[in-house]
Length: 82
Image 1: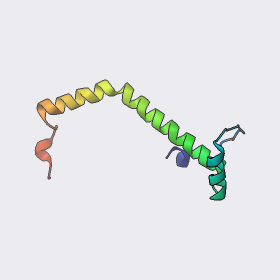
Image 2 (image 1 turned 180 degrees about the horizontal axis):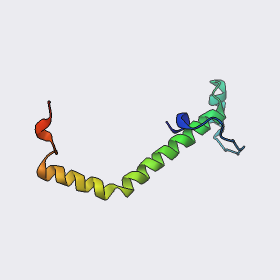
Image 3 (image 1 turned 30 degrees about the vertical axis):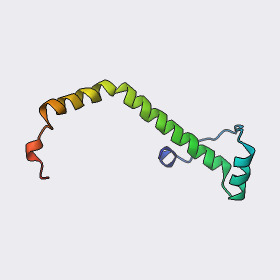
Image 4 (image 1 turned 90 degrees about the vertical axis):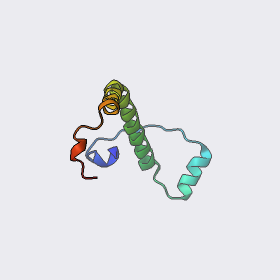
């Protein structure tokens, strides 16, 4: 994922995060590192937002490609071994 690919030498900044009390209590009881979990969650949200943005930006090309395949079949399909 995104966090796994990032360099660990990145400077970190302190920030305040508000969490529901029951969620925080359960996380602490399970010895979950809140900072690491928050970082992973934000990295996942960034990856998802980038994916959605890419799909939106490329929707026309994807639809065009799908229409071509529907009309003409897969290019090089005659060379498929399965």
